Image (cartoon, rainbow, N blue to C red; front, side, top):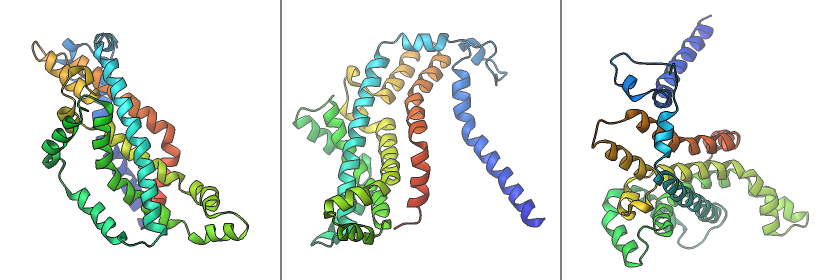
Length: 278
């Protein structure tokens, strides 16, 4: 009875924590369907009745939304693609091979993760400006990749190290080459780790604000986080239309939700299996 009671209390606590965590997301989506006048009332509205889509219509009427969406997608997909490739090759090298400078490389990866991003803004701006890549997908993507790759290396290293090398050796005994054994035996087992690393890279690139603010000064090259900030500032010249602000925030979150729905199965298995491998 005591064990059952303890499990029940822990389950109830988990539900309460989940509700507290999800409430801001619900409030954002709920407020996006409520007229601005009703939002300014002292009485909170927990369910939009009657609901309205005027906030979304007003938000999408701003043509810069689609430009910012395209910019964010281009940068994010570029970062995810190259981060997975670079981190995967580095993780395989660290886990499978012993080479001169391996320890120094591992230490360098750790040091890079310790550097505060704010301390690099001036150097990054001068570097990107010197090669003429301000307000470009390539310029921002290079900086994002350099910031995300070190952590993704550590994520993938655990997955690669968790796959026994004996599997590849057995496949080589059966006639496969080293490359063939790796691609046909080891690589499929690393799929959850690749998905987990891709999710991390996606979130970092999609939600990043400060680096984009420095490297994308032109309004025509803004990403969605920058567009959302400009949207709020534009509304600040009059009484803030919080309904449209919430609608804009919901639109920014929709691609992330879609991405998670696509990869959620692989992501769950990847996080669980990678948690106990070092």
